[in-house]
Image 1 (cartoon, rainbow over the protein chains, first blue to last red):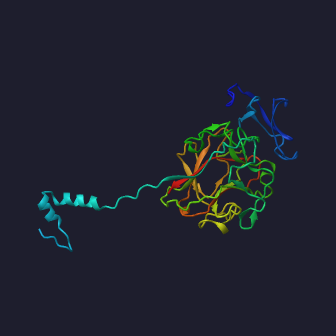
Image 2 (image 1 turned 120 degrees about the horizontal axis):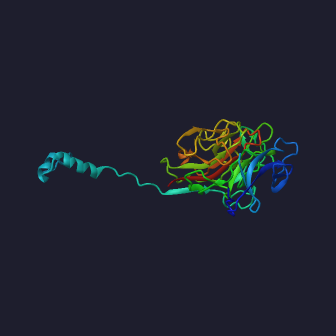
Length: 66
Length: 281
């Protein structure tokens, strides 16, 4: 899949809701890209949820594969 | 030939004069005196927005004249909205939360004919994360600018169209409705423009919506709410919906209210794009 903005090949990752941020991480949980911030409480059920994605670090574009 | 001043001249008399059959003459006379069809009205666009002018990621800044419900906004009866920091806002590409929302806005804007996504296009959506709904699942509204249909013809051309993306693994409970009232701060039946156009509860009242139930519009459904998840993935095509506004023709002050209610889980992001109201004057 190519990035719709820069047309470069997008990378595979996991889009995860961490405390304070939606992050892109690898399968081991290592941070690949800090995507966007949020104000969700740390004990909210959304924290820790994730979905596979394609992302472009240059353009900050994320496509969810859910 | 003398002409009877009361009864005129008969087809038989004319027939004998011009050498044409009575039926032929009757046909000519009929065409000459048939009232012409009224001329078509002038196509008029009352509202057209695809949110492409919203330039900030995740912004809550609304287009000129638009607003979202404040803490005192009446949804129905005495029910005010119940929402925290989120609710209606704007974004592009995915919404953040997993397994909900589109991957981009509608490609083609208000005149789109298919629901193709474009991840760089912006869209308006209800952010269901965290405080997006509040205890009890009461939602919130976004309201159009004041609309003036004074000169709109009541000839069945006045209609609202929009595109929607409603995907969420667990958003089976939410209810989306559209009201038409005379107030920007009240969506209830107490100020409805016409009978039935205002909300009476989370699932009661409001205008009838006809909406696609597949990706090409070959099947549709109608009702005063669109309930539960409709699309089946983030990347699924946007689908189109239409609301007949013919009964609002002639009204001078109308606000259209888009309400999402009964939101109880974060995977309930609800997106709108390509909103248009057209008619004839």
